[in-house]
Amino acid sequence: MNTIVTVTDLAKRYRGVTALDGVSFSLTENRIYGLLGRNGAGKTTLMQLLTAQNMATSGDIAVFGEHPYENDRVLARTCFVKESQTYPQSMRVGHALRAARLLHPNWDQRFADSLLEEFQLPPQRMVKKLSRGMLSALGVIIGLASRAPLTFFDEPYLGLDAVARQLFYDHLLADFAEHPRTVILSTHLIDEVSDLIEHVLLIDHGRLLLDQDTDDLRGDVVTVSGPVAAVHEITVGRTELHGNLLGGTARVTVRGRLTEAERVQARALGLTVETVSLQELVVRLTTGAGKTEPTAKEYAL
Amino acid sequence: MNRVLPAARLQLVTWRSMVGWPWGMLAASFAVNVFFYGSMGDLGRTTVTGGLICIYAVVLVALVQSVTQWFPFALGLGVTRRAFYLSHLLLLAAQALLYAVVLYLLGVVEAATDGWGVKLRFFGIPALFLDNPVLQLLGYAVPFLLLGMLGTAVGVVFKRWGTSGLLVLGLVGILVGGALATLITWQGWWNATGSWFAAQGTTALILGWPALLALLLAVAVYPVIRRATP
Figure 1: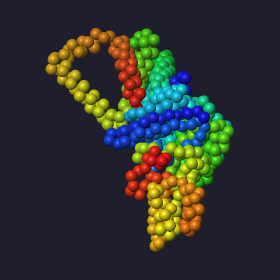
Figure 2: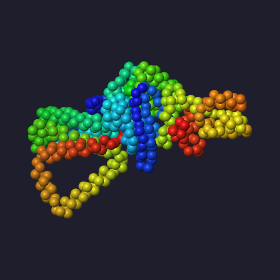
Figure 3: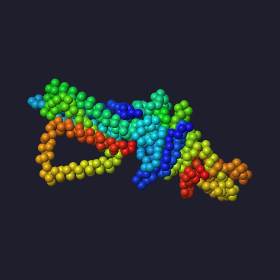
């Protein structure tokens, strides 16, 4: 497995605002990554730095082994589909696709044409007249048909209906199977993509909170509910992410996998143990109920 | 990997509007002039109009927009700032040359038809200024280059620093211009300034200095666009 992206101690500060701070990670070739985090967490900034749309304040970036800034070799193999992409005024849908074709060496025109039909985008329509959903569909088509070895989707689904979103996920997965590449998908609709993403990068307040395989994450956060005393017995010593009390019943979400012995014990105490979904896990980790934010290192312990 | 040519072809995707607006505007201006002077009957002399200016005005605006609209789009498709800028200069030079040839030919037709039958001088450059065909051709092309670079500079300053960048640019322009005028007046240099311009000769004044200015702008804008973000 080749490393395709290496980020070391990356920081981006705007006047008085720290958008990213001390971010380090690496990405392996031909995997689908989920870049998760709340609004303003720094997801878009991170992708802008990786594609050299913006310049870092400090830290190192290597994409395909080189710094991406002003680097044709790197950028020709990269596709960045962002929610905020603007198009020239005089542009029609067909123009936008022709433009994308000029700059992406792996572009598949037949794939683009079939996607155009499936997403029901009229090629003659002016881009500025497209609805929010159609604009997102245009971005999705460019991102898929470009077949770039490194593809970024920054919240590509805005305004897309459930059918179109499913269409996107299905095509991404099917095309990924035939033409493996590295995909970074930034999204808020975590439940929708939890089966799609193989690895999670969770950013909060500009810091990397999680850098873990999705499979390893499942079961890492559990909710235990039942009589207060019994719940306490099982969850004591674990970091509590969330909890509520109703009468004599407690419902507590904690970090840390339960051992088989603990599960047996929990059952004997009449407790219910539920594995938390990826979405809830992200919500719990990024709200933290007033606690200090756990860091990735702390989490790994 | 050279991405300058693909980046140039990128903007040509909508070449119809790139070519259509300046020439459509010029055609409209020309038509108005022909009908207007045609309706006045024979004045017994050739009328010179400044209607040609409108194509230059459209190109100025188009070049501002080329930066503000195509720069973010091109960067979104993985074009480097360098490739975008070089492709942009290439397109400007190509337009200037192509348009100059067409305008020159229209000037030739104009002269041959006695001012389109209504003694109108719309395209032709008076031989008083530039008498040789090559210089005339450059006479059409150089203003395109200079105005195009001015538009480019404005567009790039806007992309780099936003509206406040444009305001500061305007402010600096006023202050520098004002300071120069004050200095010349205070020192009593107006006569010397006037004779310097007179000494340059028409070719240098119409072609040389504007071309040099365009070139300096092209060089000066590069470091600015290198740090601009979409």
